[in-house]
Image (cartoon, rainbow, N blue to C red):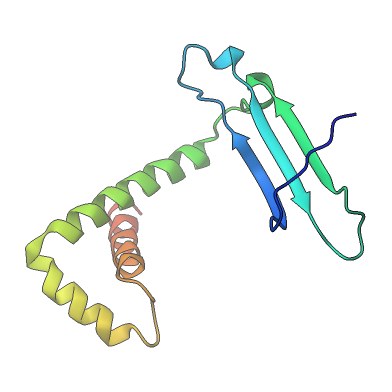
Length: 127
């Protein structure tokens, strides 16, 4: 049986160490390496696992639903609207002033504030 020895000081590892490029023409030949490792006083010291998965175990098993398609479309439109609003100089001064006025009780970042403004605009126009 193989054993993974992690470098000293590593307390946790969780997730993909290498991923499959799904857009590659060689995706069927690629493999994903997943690892989990943790140290806890109540468990043994050998609490490590490595998994190798191919593209078949990564691909989606259900078709994309209408709700998911709408959510993806909404997300993409809002991202694009926020990027455009950040670059539009006619909005910058008022957006920053309004953000600073609500910062203590509302959104913590300007991006989050703009996201919610654009999301509300999108929902009103497509509601």
